Image (cartoon, rainbow, N blue to C red):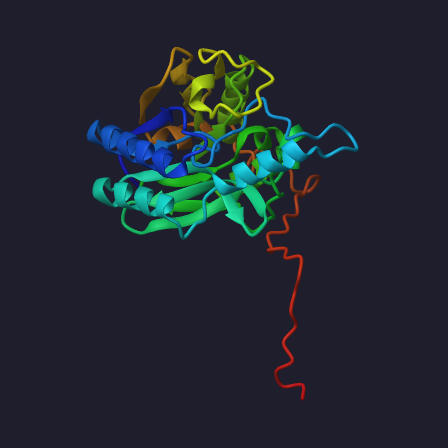
Length: 315
């Protein structure tokens, strides 16, 4: 286990219709943060591929408008594939710096998009992903649902790192599963910039006795293409997401942020021993659990729509 080390959250806006440009922007941030000593860097939800804030995709109840289908086509084309150049760009930046990076993206898989968090290791490149289990409200129009096979926690020299995306953090059973995996560095990429978000992050830090790193974009209307439908209006200066990124300690103390004043990198020192100090009086999956009363069953098998049963040995 490492001694005290520096973590960072990257509060930046993506280039929603240009994932390669977003990846290059992210790479520049990684180089800058690592140059300041950061060994872990967390980016916001949907940084590669974009978060379509304010768009309805032409879907009143019972109706799909042609312009909504065009908007989805445009959004699908701006998403990334894991074998694509965007991932290669982030891999190169992490290889150059040795940093561990958690990156929000819109992942394209056939005709379906997923809101995904990618995990990059400086030595090994892309090591895993988490697909958002439960898109919120209108997100269900444009994103598929992840399954239980992508809820990893990675054992690293920095601690045990995992990610839960945006309002998934309000799912108590998902949080409990993350705690059961010994998570100590709990990453929360989000698009929620409300005042109520950081209190939720403080609760999770206290509940899990873990560090919580939450990253949200700071982005204005002029970052989106002119044709982007925005219920917030079309003034180029409108703030579509105002950030609010923060780093929280295992006893709920705010170490950095929340920041609402623009793009920024927030830093904090992480002391792994603080996690164990916190568990002295509260370990939700250990001495403070009651397995004689409560039990959580997690189905972590991948779920595929089509399964092919081999005929080998049956003829």
